[in-house]
Amino acid sequence: MSRDPETGLPEHFLADMARRSPYGTHPDVRDAALAPFSEASHEAAVNLLTKALRRLSEGDAEKADRMIARAAALPFDEREHAWPGTGMAEQMLFDLLADQAEEVAAFLDGDREDDEWDEDLDEIDEGFPVPLEPVVAYVAEQVGPAEGVALRDAVETVADDGALYGIGPEQAERLREAVAALPVGPSGRAIGPEAGAAERESVIRAHLMVYLRVAVETRS
Image 1 (cartoon, rainbow, N blue to C red):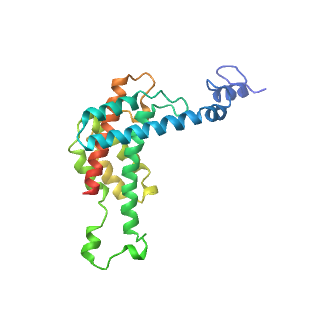
Image 2 (cartoon, rainbow, N blue to C red):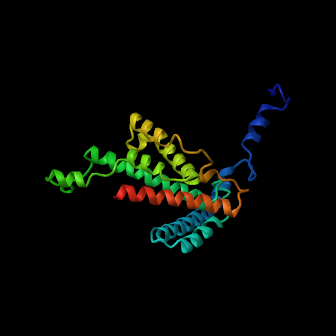
Image 3 (cartoon, helix red, strand yellow):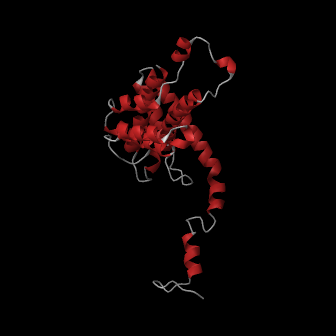
C-alpha cells in the first residue's frame, strides 16, 4: 500500500478525502438535490433585477431599491456557492457586454440574412452596432468605485474569453486597457455567505447602474 510521505496516510484515502464535500464523496448527488432550488432562486433574482432595471431607467429609485433589497435577500445558493442576487446581477452585465461583442462581430462577418441588408450605405452605417471598446472607455470615466469594480470584472472576463465572442487579441487588449485604472474587487459571484444585506444590495446596485450606462451607450 503506497502512503503519502508527509502524512503517512494511504494515498487512496487522501484522494477520497479530496473528493469529499459536506454532501459526501458524490457532489453530483448534492447538485441534483439542489438544482430545483438553484433554478427557482436564480429565476426569481432575474425577475427582480429586471424590474429594478426598469424602475431605475424610469428614475424611480425608491421602487428600484425595494426590488434590489428583495433580490439581495434571496438565500445563499449552496450549489452555486453564490448569492442569487449578486451572482445574477454580475451575469446580466456580462451577458450584455458579450452579446454586444457578438453582435458587432456578426455584423462585420456578414452573418445576416440577405434581406436584412439595405443597399443604401448611409442606412447600413446608421444600423452598425456600436463597438464595445469606446462604450467601455466612456463608461469607465463615468463610474464611481463600486461601479468601477463591477465594470472592470465584467470587461476583463469578456476579454479573457474574447475568442468566444468574436473579440480578437488586439481588441481584447484595448478593452483591458480601458478598465485598467478602475478598482479591483470581488465579483458578484465571489461575495461570500458572510456578506451582509447592505453589502449585497450595494453590489447589485453597482452592477445594475453599469448595465444601464452600457445599455444606453450601445443603443444610442
